[in-house]
Image (cartoon, rainbow, N blue to C red; front, side, top):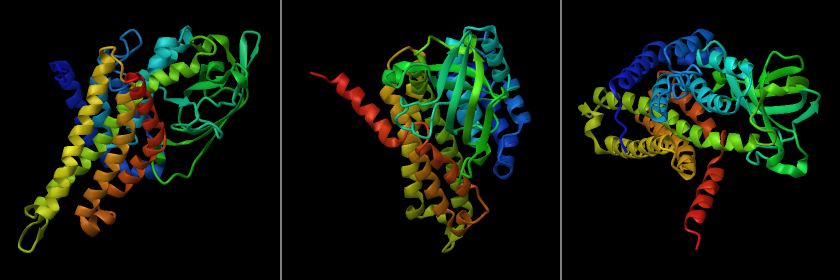
Length: 382
């Protein structure tokens, strides 16, 4: 495995790092209060090539590898964890649309999303279908050359801000299970679409909420892939996004550690910097070790994807360990800062609340462990 970058890739990652620190980090708290990601920020990221860089140049991307895409997302998360959801969703949904979109309209939407002119969401979860994602109730009933969508999606990231969404709906019967699910690319300004937002304790700029479809008419040409294959499409996409989520969380962990290493050299107690006390530095040394291990796991998983090698178990490892470890590291950094960390002088509280949401969304830890277990049972089956 070789994670080294060429000069062009390195320059792109360095540009993302400067953008994150200078443009995003100063507005982290303001975005939480505003409960949205500014459209101009999304447009800037698209213009600099930060959105869907692994997608083909024909689609509007840069045709880079997935490792580089992950490194870019990691830098954005360093500056603002919530803004990095835009990168995550463009990569996840972009691969689905690029691979399975057949119409000119779908390709046009994809180009607009990669350029940052439009925002995209993925609408899978429903009130009765969270971890059991195949139990979808939202119906897509065929009506000539169209489908009529009726039902609700919930806990959708960017629900209140997305211009278009990859929507999974049941085109078959309930008895068909996962084989009766299809995917559609649905503009959010169609008649019959309405949205509400949730009063979450974290990731407020992401605008998590519900999307309601009341007899929404969508043309057959906006179906992504073959009818009844939508569930397979999204499951394959999650193997990629789960590794990205791990790096997303490592970006926040890195920002917290950087601040804390500086702090322990500045703060004095008993006549010397507190960084000279083992009781202070040992927990940080442990955090650094775990951080390096998790980050390398994420990069290895993306390398496996780039080389068309199996990575389902590794992706699940990234997804359950990354958010948990990031929360543990942020917690330790907060404690190291004492009352200052507990107060409003630092971003640890907001970071913790933001990252904690990924211990739930996009697959809980126990679901990820089930996936890992099944993969290993298959691997070692006698």
